[in-house]
Amino acid sequence: MLDEQMWCMGAYIHSAVLSAVEKNLAGKKSKANYVEKPFMQEEEINTDRAKEENMKKVKAVFQSLEIMKANFELSKQG
Image 1 (cartoon, rainbow, N blue to C red):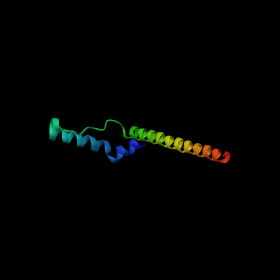
Image 2 (image 1 turned 30 degrees about the vertical axis):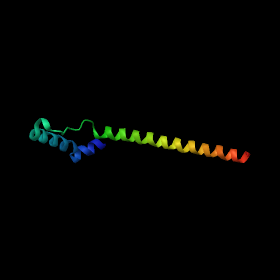
Image 3 (image 1 turned 60 degrees about the vertical axis):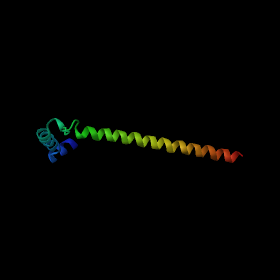
């Protein structure tokens, strides 16, 4: 759905025109490239990275809670 929206907004056309114009004007010095991956695919990659980062944070919080529990139990005994 996102790719359809981007196509309607002209993001792919903008990328194509920009890269064509720059390659004609700058020649071999041109740094412009057409979009390599669909925008939707990039969004999925970013979502996966965010999920991984959130899981790391959850694990860190869980470990700190376990440490706090162990410290509490030790202080209760002594």
